[in-house]
Image (tube, rainbow, N blue to C red):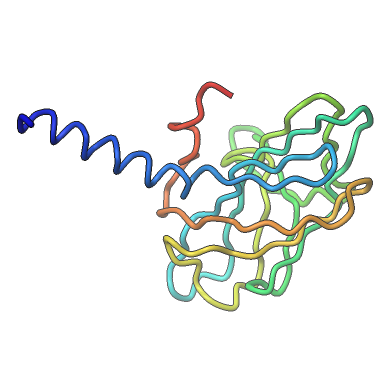
Length: 162
């Protein structure tokens, strides 16, 4: 085997082995929660953000009403908006509608989950258990993969096609 072929084979195996770390989905009825992830936090930091895509393959709209996690005193649904050139974060109290046949993305700079009163730092490479409560689907337990600080959407690199 040539050195180049051996190197390419090793890279392919490494990529295949690491893909499942980012490619995680959770299903409940017609809902699929794709790639839930959070940014790592520093020691003493009391808030953190969580992100994901929620696909609704059902025939009726659903609504994400709330979330809970043992790592935070409270978990809120938030949105970021621009107000006269200033970015503002606001709690979404009525929940987030997931229209039938559509995907809603919770991502940095937009809709997201806010972990408030963190009980411990969110460490890169760990998983954060979260229970999402939907109006129709009920409670859905997911695991948020913690990525490095500043990450934008680590799963998008490997899943641009869907």
